[in-house]
Length: 397
Image (cartoon, helix red, strand yellow):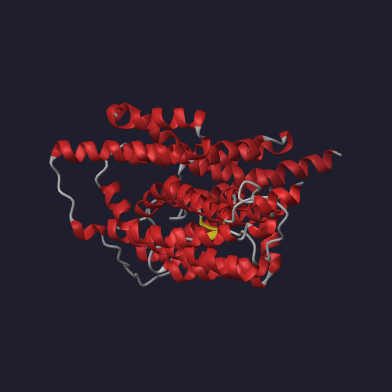
């Protein structure tokens, strides 16, 4: 019976699933990407270039792994990574130093492919600590919709109302529909103000930057970006695929994402990685009843991202025309699910709760010491607290 259903399923199903994967992934988080890149010092043009480079690298990555391994492996950009950037802010050395940090992260991802113990070391970081750090980084972005509601109720309220209704009726499309609501708000504002859109801003273009390295960029950008990308994207991505019956080839996956991250870095792309949430769309049974045919979802997802790359500058231009609170509201609702999941995993184990709470609070504080971001100090402090508390328990026993 199952074989019959699989054979009767149209071949277009995985292709449609791949398009949905790309559309949901892009529209849900591109605003977060632009927010994060601008926060660490990118100009509007450099942020648009980064979004373009990310779309190209993700698209090529999906096409390569899909064709090469005949598996519905999806590549995505690191959403937790750009949330980290948004919480980090400017670093010593400016945007060139940030780009240097991107290259450090890419090199470490590549190293994790050639030297598996490095990946295993990241996997040994207690999930409660890693998720608490992520939750602390996400907190300021997640409260933005509510602070924006006070400063610009007419602009932000439609976004939140549409998101809430869609979350009830069409959960997968809740954030994309919230972005549609934001677009309507922006267009209405443009019409009312009579503002003109410069057509040249709609043309995709790349702005390369010569990278530099500083202590702040290596320790405050490169290392935390690597950790959060590995712990929140690559490791869970492998686990999600395993739960769906696929064994992701670790070394090739890290080489593809590491090289892609490195190639896109000087154009402003922060990091690409294995898809985790998007993997369930492309590789799940809704894609196709026959697991052997689902790999086509990777192909259509890759092609869709390349199409979106051509439109990325238009999306970036739209963001620039938005009222102050609207885009942060979209970015915030896009991260609600990730924040909730991170909090749950951080405090799920009572024995790990106190180190996780300390990690969360340090990350959420936004404190920077010696030019190094709070995310690094949160991870370090959380591991220190955990070591002290667990050592005390062992002596008591």
